[in-house]
Structure formats: structure tokens, C-alpha cells
Length: 339
Image (cartoon, rainbow, N blue to C red; front, side, top):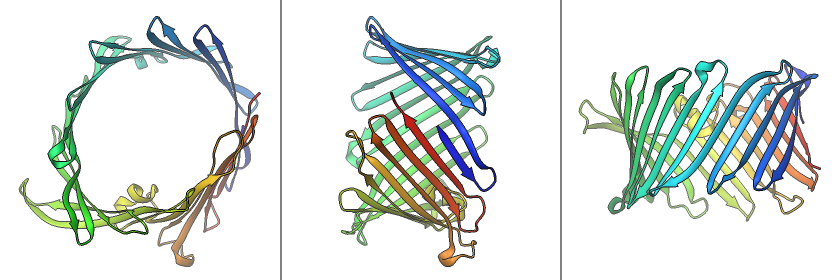
């Protein structure tokens, strides 16, 4: 059960869900229903097991208020000639939302490849296909991934090639300089996006990263300037507590560093709480800064959360978002009972 209290909506019961499990001869069935306001919202039955050596699963969902079919999904996975094969069949409402999706993946030497084909089945039409390959480049201690995507509506959509964490300098100005490169081709354009990462060798907080971008020039092999647009990192305090921080120097990159587009700076602390039954409780508190709040130190938002298993049958969690301007705050309590 989840209960919320917000500035806009007051107290409300966001929802109650009940889940039951039944195991019979290697198959496990899960029955789940949820209630909203005073009525039953959904009811679903999921089953998982194996037929011989092949794992299979099935899920059926319907609307109990109207006894109407919502969706059915079935899937299987197996290995064949060294390849991993999975297939999903989905039937939904409307019927044009139904599809079947086949994925084949495998590894040979240092190459990993995966291909996916998706077909609409009501009617039977080609929907999309993509293929990706990844291989290691040991000499430069990096990896390269190439992907291509086609759809039934547009034909060729894109081809991308990425290189991850290439080492430019092992130690320059007291930092390791790494480079991520993404090259993208579409029918409309091609783009090259180099991302620069600096990891200073600081003893107190070794997990710190400066992230930047290399601005390309008019030619594909020329550059204009290297720009640093943010810093992020974390520091361990003892065995169970971590302090993290992030700062974006470009408003367009806020979400990549703080996780929220409207805040450019983050300071947070998280850790472990004592909990029952061999489980670990957790807590997390964070402060976000926006530069326009008018409050002390430009503090714009405070968030907090914790989760604890009190007994084998009862767990509790709490989340809060409190803007410093006094409006838009939200509180959530979630209780879980097992019997």
C-alpha cells in the first residue's frame, strides 16, 4: 500500500496491490491485483516454468471492472548451436499493438553480437530490426560497438559506432584522460560526438570524474576546442556510507550530472541502515541547487528516502521531495505485509 501527501493533492491512497504465489511441479504462478480508489483496477496471472529443458513464461492481464481482456504475453528462451535465442509473443488491445519479437545473440572470440527482428502479427507485417556487435580492442584497452536499425515505416533509420573509455593519457597533470566517441549516421545527417573524461588521482576521493566535450571543426578529423562541462564523483565514508556530488557547467547537461534538468548541482549522502532478516535497509538524502531559488546557497530542492525491513512480515519505506520555495512538496509512505 502506498499513501501520498502532496502540496497539490493533499492526502491520497495511491494504490493497494496484492500478490500471491503458487508453485506446482516446477511451475510458479503469480496472481496480482491492484485497487484504485474503491474499485479493482487490474488483475494479472503470470506463470513461469520449464518444458523439458526450455524455460517458458506467460502473462495474462484483464480489467476486472469490465471483465475485458487487456493483454497476453508469452515467451521462451533456449540455446541452439551456441546461440542464445529468445522469442516474445504479445497480444494486446487494439490488435494492431500485437507483435512477435525474436532475438538471437552469441559470442565468438572477442566478438559479441545480437540481432532482433520484430513483426506485427495483426496483420503480419515487418515492424523493426536491429543488429549490434561489440568487440574488445585489447591494445588500447577499450571496446567498440556498432549498431544499425531498420523499421518497416522508414527503412534505414540509423547506424552508430561507439568507442568506450579510450585512454588518451595515463597520467597528465595528475589525471587520467579518457575518451568516449560516438559516430552516428542517419538519412538526414551524420554526427561525431567525442566526450572527454578526466579522472584525477586524488587519494581522499578517487572516484571523481571531469566530463567534457571536444568541439569538432569543419572537417571530420579537426577539432576546435576541448570544453569541460561538468564534474561528478563520490567518496566513501567508512564501510557503509557514501557522499556523492555533481555539478554541471552547462544548463543543457544538468540531467546527465544531477538527474534533474532544472538543477545544476547535487550533494548527497547514502548508506545502509540496520534491518531485519539478513536484509539491508537503506537511506538517501540529497540537496539540489538551481541558482534561481533565491534561498541560502541557491538551495532549490531537498529529497530523502529510507527503506527498512522491520520484521519477516513487515517492510516500510518513505520518500520525500521538498522544494525550498514551499510549493510542490510530496511525501510517500509504502507499507508491505507478507504472510
